Length: 154
Image 1 (spheres, helix red, strand yellow):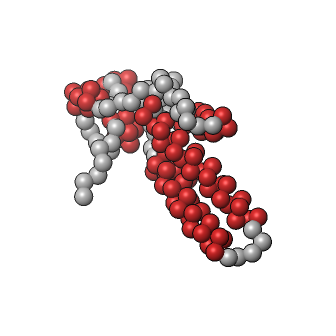
Image 2 (image 1 turned 135 degrees about the vertical axis):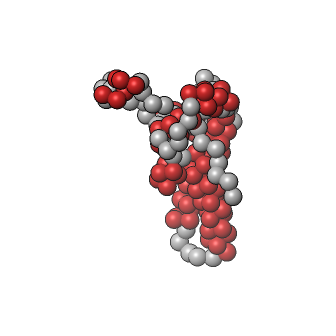
Image 3 (image 1 turned 90 degrees about the vertical axis):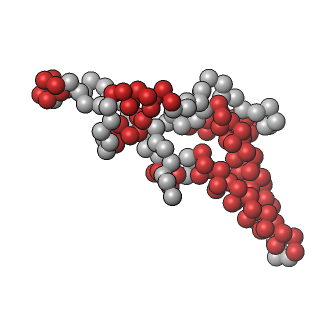
């Protein structure tokens, strides 16, 4: 199975491929970049869920992985997380184990799976963040003697 295509910045940061300047420019021009200028909580979220949306969205924006296209996915995560918490509280308050308890456990399990999957898709879990490699631009880096003589290699 073929590996997913990686952004050119990631390839360059890893330094594992020797691409020409022309190849790099072509890759940059053909890569799809989603905008980040309209990240807003969907209107169907309650005020407290919008607050949570904004909190998580700001974190994702800071690590440069959220775009306008991710708003609905983040909203679905927040809704399922909220429902999971409500069901969990009901389960914890129950004094006896019976049919209602078992049904709530099934609902809790489904909500947990939904939360886990969407959290992973959004980079909200430790393991999903470990898979992310976000290249950082090095500023004020001194050039080596070779770079001074021959220019920097891309």
